[in-house]
Image 1 (tube, rainbow, N blue to C red):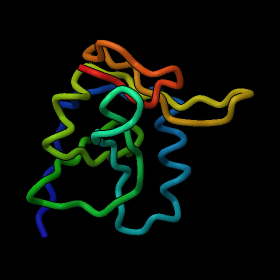
Image 2 (image 1 turned 90 degrees about the vertical axis):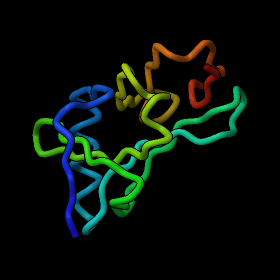
Image 3 (image 1 turned 120 degrees about the vertical axis):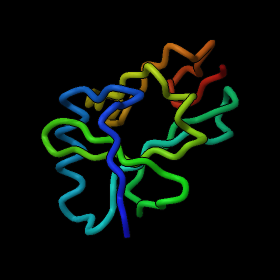
Amino acid sequence: MSISVNKATPFTLSNNAKVKILSLGKDEDNKYFRVFVTGGGCSGFQYGFKFDLFDSEEDSILDFDNGVKVVLDQLSYPYLLGSNIDYKEDLMGSKFTVENPNAKSTCGCGASFTV
């Protein structure tokens, strides 16, 4: 299987996000951290994060520093362009967050958006 790694990334990852991805990925053999957009949520689209296998026909592997590799599918790419993904821990819990310059509006919790 040939895996292509893309050096140009459509979004940035904060240091907190990179550290958390590396930490979570220690137990995920042959899987990559996937960032994706899907229909749903309060505002029409929602962000998703999971460890998943690489699909050479649908995905690109994005190469970040510190050995972090993220899988992104072709359909999610334009929705995440220019975004910054962070990982936050506070009194409300812990989660990955997305600052998306393409979002016209977001829901109160920030998990869904409209374009």
